Picture (tube, helix red, strand yellow):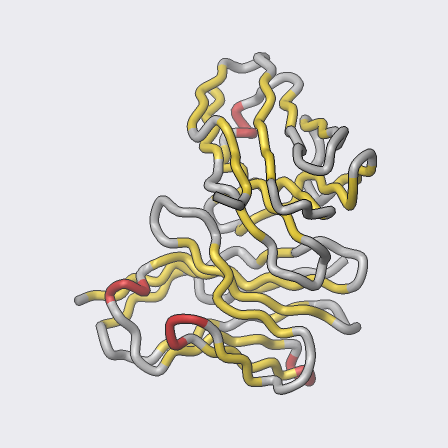
Length: 112
Length: 112
């Protein structure tokens, strides 16, 4: 099925551990982005990419890295997990800024 | 920077009641406006969007929204809610060159 696939769905990390959240889309979309969702704060943009090899910071980029080596994949790396990064993470992709953004199912991350 | 405000954080309605959720944004230029819905345990889905033209936009499941440029608003409405409309609703905005900015969300509970 076409869409945005995120893995894993759930993850528990210890403070200081690193990990990568995977995001892949098979719709040949140029625009991909990562958001975190926290209660009462909606979704906040972490990083985004407008094409392979091009990434930029969003509203809350600290503690996260991204890269975009292919059109399909846009992984999000937590360098040294902190409890403040406990959240639900959503990846999204779209053909352009003016078209529908497709969201993945989300990754629920808990940092203890 | 653009910002989006959703003033109702929690709304509780009985079935068949009418719904109006407020959304105001801060950007003064040309904007694209969206409403997304997130059902419990699911990812975000697009309800409706406004790019240009008729300011009254109709979406899926009987939802509609009205863009009032002079008030910087894009309120979501439904004449008669159902129990299955229980979800969290997010207003989002983007303007040329920017990714989506989301409001804090409104949790709607519909009592049967």
